[in-house]
Structures are given as structure tokens and as C-alpha cells.
Image 1: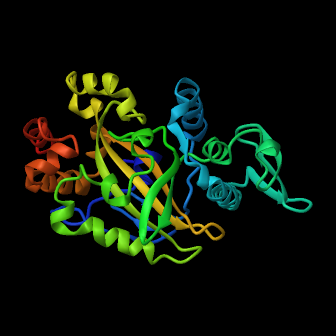
Image 2 (image 1 turned 135 degrees about the vertical axis):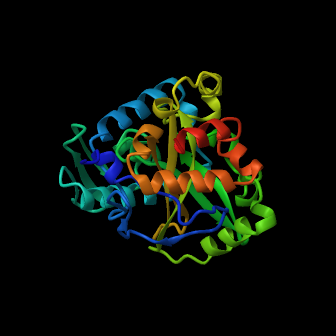
Length: 317
């Protein structure tokens, strides 16, 4: 049987039959081979869902402009992020080009979206909108910028439309430690302090990545706190595990921007329904083993708590 392309390139997040939170970062990009195929050869990914996902992001920002937030001192970092992301996109997809023109001017063209823009680096008026917002209209990842002050990191800017049970508007200005307060076992196991120590040691141009996983009912990218009234109700209407319940995996890239020194945190969300997960026997077996062993509070946090017995029975059929 030939697996669907989205299964072959899915970023499978598990190693072994037991899972605990850890820093689990690795240099990026780097190709990973899985039981179904491979993923990870580029920082940004532009698959067949790209246009639809960017249209969904534009619609969300149109309804709720507050998904883009930025403290005043972060504008230089936002321009740094824009130039870095457009350069990365142009190096990844041949339908996109970034051409240097005269002094600090660039011409960006994205044939897939029908976008052409000439702008002067650092000049908001020439771009026609804030640089971080424009960046988010061209790449599929959510974007968070972490500023370093007095040996600590703070979430001081971002465009996040596809959050999983959190809100960029709520966390704006929080420290790295405060951001991760709701995550169970992280402080006891020391993962969060170790992660911040690692990030603070990154040098300009460094790029690393990690994976995070949870669950989503339906093919819903926007599972933010702003839309909890929608997806919270959906969790109680799970009629078909195979089609309704999705494994949600975030590929998270961490990049120390070269000019501003801020850390750019990219979050690309991938959804795989259980019906497609079990097309790969090794995944079915490993996911069942991890789910069965997972401590209760971690299973609850990842959205599998109440449904775990039924899901395990379905996986083991």
C-alpha cells in the first residue's frame, strides 16, 4: 500500500515506548527518517496545504488583529525576523524570490500567493504593514520573538494564529519561566530551566528544533484560548475516533537572529487523524505503548485523559 504524502512526511514525535518532557533539541535542518518516510530537510515547509493555511491565517487576523502583538522595543527584531524568513523561504521554494536592490531595498515575490512587494529594510511605510505581520502572511509557521534582558528571556512579540490551548495576547511580556507554568512535571524534572539556559547560549545564526505533541478534535489548526468556546465543545462530541481525533505535532525551530540577537521561535503545526496514523503499524504500536504508560497529568494536559481507555482499545483492535 502506498501511503499518502502527508503521512510519509509527517514528523513522528516519539522515540521508544515511554515519553517524558525534555529539552530534546537538535541542530536544524536535518533529515529524519521514520517508519513511513522522512521529514525535516528544511526549516520552512511549503506543501500543498500552504495556500489554504495562509488564507486561514489571513481570515483569523482579519477577525482578530490581536493575534499579532509586539512591544515597542521589538521593531528592530521584527525587521530582522522578516529578512531572515524571506531569505529562508526564497532558498526553499523556487516560486519565491528575494532580490536585493539599491541601498537597504529589497524586492520580494511570491508566485504561489501572487504577492510582489518592494520595501526598504527598517521602513514600515515602504512595506505597508508591520514587518512581523507581513512575515506571517508569507510563511506557514507561527512566529514568536524572545528578547533577552538581564540573563532571562521574554516573549515580547509574535503572530500566532494556530496556537494549541494558549494565547499570544495573554503571554505577551511574560518570562520564559512564566510561559511554561501550566506544563506539568517540567519544573520537577528541570526541563524548563535547562531549556532557557540552552537558548541563552545560542550564538547569532544558530538554528535548532524540537518537537511537541498533543491532540486535536477535527482538522483544527486554531485551537487557541480565543476560540475555546468552539473547540472545547467539539471535544465532547467525539463520534469516530479514527476520523475525529488527530495527533497534533508542532515542529518548533529556535533561531538566534543575526542582527538583533533576539531568539525567533517558529511553530509549524501538523495534524494526522488516527485513521491515517494506524496505516503505519510501527506508529500504532508505539503510540499505544506511550499512551498507556503516560502519567495521568501529562495525558490530561495533552488532551488524551478522558478518552485514553477508549483510544487504547481502538488502537489495539
